[in-house]
Length: 303
Image 1 (cartoon, rainbow, N blue to C red):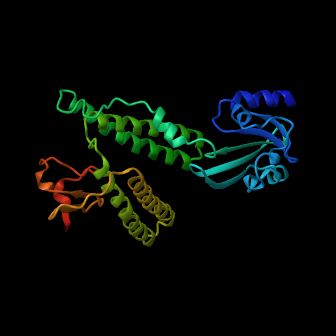
Image 2: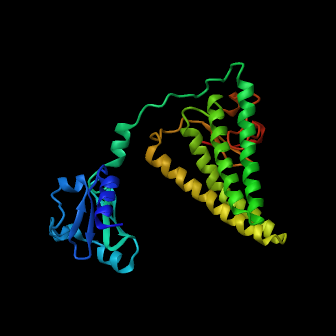
């Protein structure tokens, strides 16, 4: 590509980006700017280091990007929280660097909330209708399909058929989406899902220790390779608990004082916690995580 073609491609890709983006050189001379950068007074031909105060350029990684030929990143505290600066060498012109920041001049989270469209809820549309049984069968069938496709993908990889495995994994991911869709249609999980998310978080956290214990037994039985993977899975379960905890902390409702005498039941199979009177649930109620009947729940504590 010629210099002009690179600059034309730069404008086509970056002119609508909400923050300033420039092509600069090791000398800090600017080659091109997008529309947002132009609003801040940047223009081709000047040195970006001449804009603002020296402290504004703390953490600049332009030289490192040119010398190493690799993308550089610098994290810092911006006006809206954590922000990140990037310096990316341009393949066709390695002495030119694409430089931009994310979170320095634009509050993405606020913009996302403002621009979000209200999504029509499909929760429970088929529950209690003549369609409920058929939709439930679809949800279960698709969920089993996820297991089947991932298992087949595993077997394909063992035979060196990596492209086949990738296709099967894609099918599994789609089946998972389908299963969740049908579950929502039938109202399988509560629309106000925070209590369930709280239970799931505790179950995932507890799952790390239980899977690690099982991995130890698998290892003792002589199945070392399987045990190695199960230990990875155990750590992933624990990480799921951490992530869910962070979601609850950041987005969940404020914690109310527990009502006196409120019971907490725990599923002895997966660790899911149910708050309230589980005996008030219908006889066919099952654990929303593992599908076991309420008879497997035991009282954990009374708060």
